[in-house]
Image (cartoon, rainbow over all chains, first blue to last red; front, top):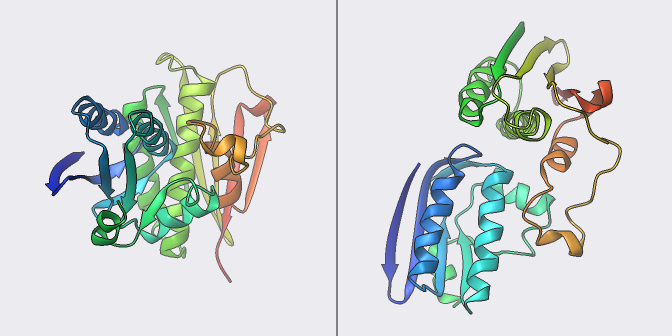
Length: 110
Length: 133
């Protein structure tokens, strides 16, 4: 899985690409480790290039939300695929995470 | 169409196994949304069988079989573990559970497939998805 990292003003944008599953979610966790280590406090994950996410990927996102909240930061997700958005809704994770339709809206919300 | 596969309990084998089975399922009359749901459930069921069932013991096999039926598809996943209490399932949507890191796989399977049955103390799971009428 490729993961791009960009910065827009003070907001770090993490852009994973492809499928996030039990086999490759450790790569995403490793990218998040670096983000926490660098004390980034405004983080958006842009899902526009993610076609699939399973519960190990969800676990990685939930862990990251807890970790970033612990250092006083904020974590938002944007541009989720329709099927992935429905999965968040089914699990009521749409009330647990801050989800945005566009990257601009996610950034503006900090 | 009947397909059977046996894989050793290694998580790196899950994506390929899921993809190969999904290639067959895509030829059936499912909507794109249902194909996503079946893929998710296959992925979760294989992960559960390998991680929780066979406890990542690569010597233990997981058996998968897929049967295309007139009204949909049936998928069996069998592990060699100790089994589990499939009747007790915590609801991941309640407030005390939403922040928990794990405990969503079986809930997703039960809510994305049309029928889920367990046999042999939970070592065998049969999940069914029907075509939309």
